[in-house]
Image (cartoon, rainbow, N blue to C red; front, side, top):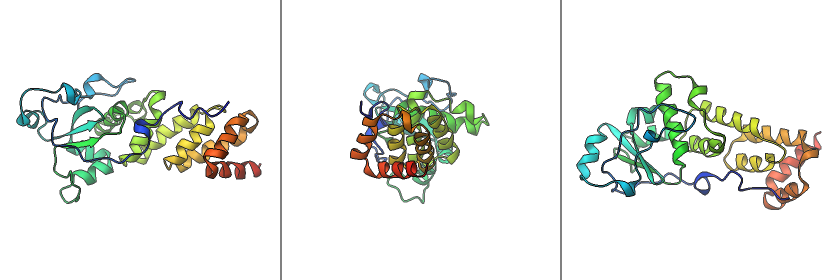
Length: 236
């Protein structure tokens, strides 16, 4: 049985860049900044799909999002305060700084077209929650199926290392002999060096339980990761 590489797909198919949005879709967006985190992101945290936005005119959004930024996440939209975004994410801090030199600087819209909307909802909850002094463990109660896309997006947004550390800690705790090789490939692909080392050590400890087909597929498709794993095996 080969590795189930698609058992937990990456949001948007991989580490795509953050892109500059278009000029449209600026009408009738609901504010979402005040939502508190929960096991499932509150529906109010995400605005309507741009396809559902209608009426008004360009000035409507300016009124409803005064002093805020509209973040387009995939096909969903949300208003968030500039100061909260900048404090919680180095990416947003650079992007929204007047002297930042980015094309979107000073704009009212920022697009994350390949991000997972639910993952962004949890990270935005974290930004607002830490601003209010809520505990990190409560804020990052991310469902298991969102751990990978949320950790990936936190890295893309250059959030605090504490965010990635807590998410990757849970990823490491959930790995099994059946999933460790695909987890290892994912961690290496996203530059999560510490997590990759922990997963590699786990694979060494559970080497007798690893599926031979999975190891062979790893060697065929990801020779560099396989070589690192073989070197780790040799040290035992």
